[in-house]
Image (tube, rainbow, N blue to C red):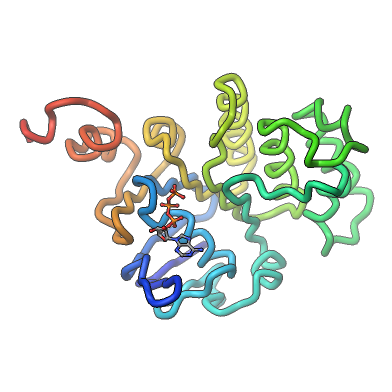
Length: 241
Ligand code: ATP
């Protein structure tokens, strides 16, 4: 479904992705794990067209989207739920959700989709006429997820969906993402919490200073001594390996 081949991205004169390649198959749940600054968010920005790569190629459903606009990429079915929520603070909850489906004209289904978001996160329904910026951090995260889903995406890019959430909301958010995937939406998720990410996904890629250093099934990565030592906090296994 998605093929990222040898992409390089740069901010100014600094290369932060070095020939990153990854694949996501239809229906899969794939995660990208790694430390702060490894390039995970940058990889998602490259896919959604926010930061086109300087070299390499990205294809989605057989079409080359390497230099496509974010609008075109959204129209093709890729929604990006960015880190730090990035909702529109002066727009109401409902308007924020409407922004997520601004290209759609199937009004009835859009209303049903909005109801589905309110069913899942009732607090958003209660505050549908309230400015997005007045919501708590966790509620804004729910709104950002809801907004991404309002475009009925084929593939959703989640960037650190658990960031800044209270523990009960973290689980609720992860459960929701797994449910979405179970219903057929393909997911590529960046997550600092490597353990949670590996527990949820089918396959994962480890990104270290802009390089993919490891990839495999979640089970393979959970068992990998380097991942266990450096990312899962299991002591002493690197040395034993
Ligand atoms: P984090 O979890 O901390 O967001 P990450 O793996 O998602 O980490 P990126 O945000 O992709 O990492 O950042 C990769 C590198 O690019 C880092 O060194 C970061 O400092 C740098 N970087 C990110 N955004 C910018 C920007 N707008 N301008 C300049 N450098 C940037």
